Amino acid sequence: MKQHIFLSSPHMSEEGYEKKYIEEAFDTNWIAPLGKNVTEFEKEMEEKIGAGKAVALSAGTAAIHMALKSIGVSQGDVVFCQSLTFSATANPIVYEKAEPVFIDSECDTWNMSPKALEEAFEKYVEMGRKPKAVMIVHLYGICAKIDEIAEICGRYQVPLIEDAAESLGSTYKGRYTGTFGDYGIISFNGNKIITSSGGGMLLVNTEDAEKRAEKVLYWSTQAREPAPWYQHTEIGYNYRMSNIVAGIGRGQLKVLDQRVEKKRCIQEYYQKHLGDLCGLHFMPAPKDTRCNCWLSVVQLDEDCQVKPLDIIKALEAEDVESRPVWKPMHLQPVFSGCDFISLTGDLHIVDDETGADNSISGQIFKHGVCLPSDSKMTDEDLQRICDTIRMLWEQTSSENSGR
Image (cartoon, rainbow, N blue to C red; front, side, top):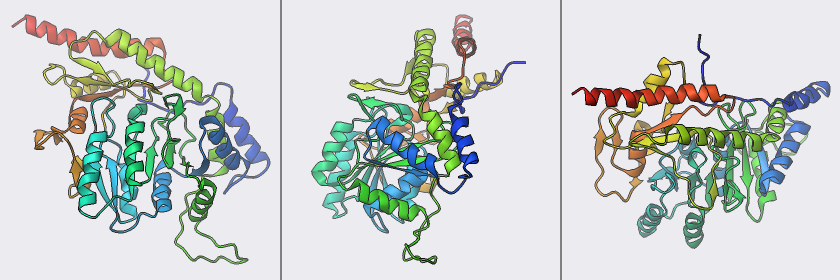
């Protein structure tokens, strides 16, 4: 019986670093709510990637929520948000009763288009509704055009949030993602490049980072006032990371570089063994960046006879997990009333089954497949995947020659 291959699953260190920190928490009875692992995890992350102040939270989504709240986003405000992303990027905007305006991607990075962002600013400033924040995403570990986007945000004096949930370990001009914006977001969900079983981290990179981080700590621990009794003057949240979870995260952080190298090797393997297939292309590798290759993603040409769903079904039949590219937020029913800024002209649906449109993000979604990128995969696993995918092209070629 063939072993199941995951898209991207937890990979604990062979050295057992995680167990050491968990056992220490048990031995000292610091199971919850906080403890040494939490504060040390924050410090170690700051030192590793060069962030201002780090706050360990229960999820990357919680970190986005706290970033928006720290900026002062509230009811009626506008937040510019990348459309091509997971819904967790956009949902916290609505938590604060603000209005997301989705921005299209561009082909060079698959991330937010600086030109579309500029157009969005011109439109909303003219309306007297300058956005309260801009949120970019480093999709699948691919760095967005940070310099251009940061320049636009700086010119309009609007804070920048980097959703680096998928890009921990990726660098732009030698500097880690999550450290360029006023706020950076990291996720330690089970499928991420390192995991703490769950959890996330907010990186605060402002000049007053310590003060803002303290306020986030206050909100994320139920906004409890420093009084002998339980007193609250603001609404708080139960968002703090536990000491056990942080212990797993500390152990995982020690092997981050190893995981990045493995993920990059997986991408290189696919490129070597699938790169000659007609109509198949790999995700971009922008200049001056180094991608963590959290997921290896391919795009198929419009006229390619093999379709994304063909690859997904063929792999599924071999007990191998794959996935479509994220469906853009502007195409999600829950956000159907939100504005979408694109440079593709008149938008129209080009795929009735998926609801994909002719925007750049819509096309990336329509033609994209996330290949298995589990860091525990062997060369035999990768060969099995590549053989399955190549068979689809061979079958198509055979069918064409028989006509």
